[in-house]
Length: 123
Length: 221
Image (tube, rainbow over all chains, first blue to last red; front, top):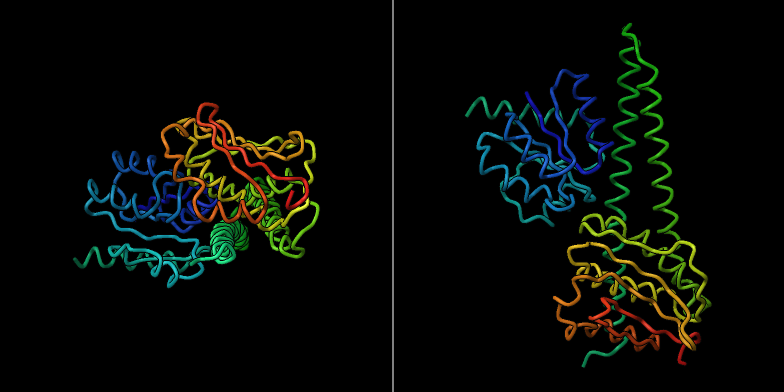
């Protein structure tokens, strides 16, 4: 399982990547949408974990851009909204199945990642 | 007919809603970073319990990141508290430069999201007026919002307050994108209602790339 973490809060993504690597999950991190697009040009990821609100390219717009060239890539959104329901109500995004609210519980994140990979294998 | 008071209530609620939403998102980011670093310390403890050698530098870095985020959170909450208390008194003596500094702190995340750099003279002389601090904050925020739209390619907005004869003036400058906007549509109805309530006037100087807000030192003058 190879993960790309995208959040403009560097200290968040770098530490999350470190914690995932301690659990033997390979995770790269970037702090901008542009860097995420560049990374996916040379590397193949199973899942992109995207912050919804970022400068220039937000997570929802970034997903649309990444989908064009990475048909197999799956997505988990991380949001600073009060709850997952608040995010769903505020977001018009229909293609994203997976949401997590900050601060994220790493076990919940890994469960969602495994669920996505299991579904990918079944498909 | 919509009254000036109705416009001001609607405008103040919009300001309050936008501000608290932005602040709560920022606080969530602070908590998320603390959460990950506290989690990392926990992970390292588990590794140590299992006999794996732990580099003290990793612990030091994680704890420093937590301290930094606690300080960041403290600044956000202090600004939020100051903002909340601005409704305590309807009219009082207000240092406009303090208000601008508060709005800068409260708007920083919004500015970052829009890719705009906000500049303020932190050592500016106090400019004291007698006015409603909350409505003044609301006015500054709406004008700053417009100024950010007018920031142009330079993506910088400079703002400060100064004394000019019998008035105080808040100046938003370096608005390189101002010529491309339609000043006819600004100030809008809500800004006009706020200006009238605060006995203030606004001028847009396209050639100088500036917006000025003139306020009497005493309300109604």
